[in-house]
Image 1 (cartoon, rainbow over the protein chains, first blue to last red):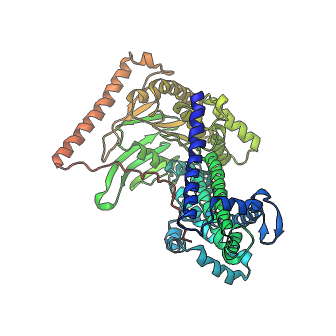
Image 2: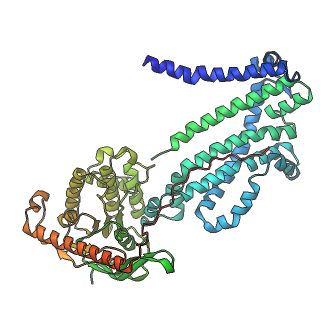
Image 3: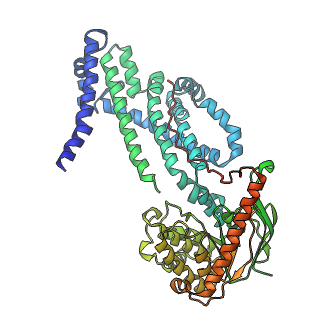
Length: 260
Length: 291
């Protein structure tokens, strides 16, 4: 029992801390010798302190606590992600259920899938004439594909047994969808949702950089222009940690849906 | 006119030039209220036969009639107990049965439907497990749920596809007893597909061997004129039981031998008849993003 506790302490706390320590050490060495323009860890902490220690403070539109910026970004991501799910799930279901739909639309989807957010954003600006909807459009366009692909795969992987049950019971198409297809594809769909959320968060920086909207990405770009490089590192770490937490949270939800 | 009629039914799989002919010239008639079992080798086409009757697949030639009407598709008047239970894992025992009841009896109120589903869950002795998910149940219990679901649809005929095939001997014996009871109480027309001759004789009014495949067809039917309820232990000493058993086994062995001889005569390796199911694919976990 006791050795178990020590074991997990080492595994889940000590070793990760050692790992992070190694990276910080490397960073410190690099900034003091090879690349003097890279701020040292200590300097980064000192310059970032006001943003971390009073994370909700709002001193100006582009001078706010880090959590306040994160909050703006999260709201923006939530909007884009919601749009991605709302569009991606039905497209995925149609792809999974209909061969004709797949033959018709799969090629164009494969073409649109690898397009970078940096390419979508200007189009969004042209379409909507405003940065906010353009950003949301970009997030949605980039992050919907894992949901589309995994939902389609989930529907195609439904065991014939379940389909036979639906056929013997003569369930209507709608009832088959709600009672059999969607629940059976749910584990795959959630994998898609999780990957989509990861991408949506990834895209936020690009979207905010180009539109100059307040948020972590916008702050990062502004501080680059203001030559405060410490804040770039602060933003990178914040983005990483938030992304990690989001992924973990989706992982927990996903596990709840893995039945059978 | 029998209740179930198969006449000259042929069914094969695959493209025309290398088609595997599974069933050829199958003729079968079952009277209303009769329990007929079909015994055959695994891979001989037993499941194909059930699927034809259920309407899940269509015959290449010949006709399948149930209740005087040609079968054109599946329907709840023909309840199926699938070999691998086919329960929906995200629904509880009661919900699995309720799904069928809701579909077949839309005119009842919600509480009447629930009561009806519960009645069938209790009929297969699963009352205390009604709220459990299939994965929390043993194989025998899952198959009971499957039987309950099929019965709850009040089908005109119950098709059982090797219902106890995946169960251990003890559970098998218990469920055979329950099926015997249910069959006597309900007086339903039933078709039992099995690979166990003893099970076939124990449960049915008539037993018919399905010859070895490919191009399998049905052998001569034997009437099981042993009074019910039948007891497995006593049955073993019954000369009538032994005679039927011998007749069915001999037919099966002979047909197996004949098929082997044919194959050797053709001097060609037998085509692989097992259609391999596509392996379940993993979720796409590649994140593609280019910034």
